[in-house]
Image (cartoon, rainbow, N blue to C red; front, top):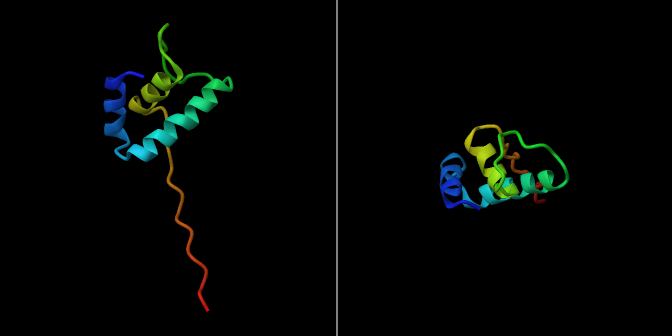
Length: 73
């Protein structure tokens, strides 16, 4: 994993925990056979591809609405 890609992706997704979750989910998809949405180089790993997709705006994420606690009676 390239540190320059990581720094650039961190500017797009500033939460470290969220960035790790988005990258790991995308790596699982790529490992399962999904096609990359960006041009890939010969030495790019799946994490580099996922980070590049985030940097180029090809990979989006959506935060789920927080679940409201049930009424305490």
